[in-house]
Length: 115
Image (cartoon, rainbow, N blue to C red; front, side):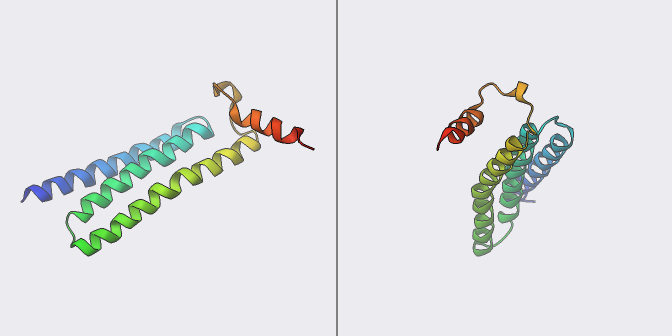
């Protein structure tokens, strides 16, 4: 068993653990904003760690393809979370008492004042 195998195994286990913790958070957190946090950050980190662990065991050109998968995930997860968060805000699914600053409410108020 080489050092590369140990590093790969550690990345795979840590990635799976991160995904598991994100899934538990997704089921247990009380509101949409907290669930979005659990759905994006730990899941993205977990996927990237799993991809790194897998890429260490593959040839370079296959590893490059896994890098593109990771890049796609990093680019799309924040955009999707923002869209879901905006939809949740507009449908009053967010607990207003949990917001410290309500920038979205201010912006919607300014936009509705326009002629």
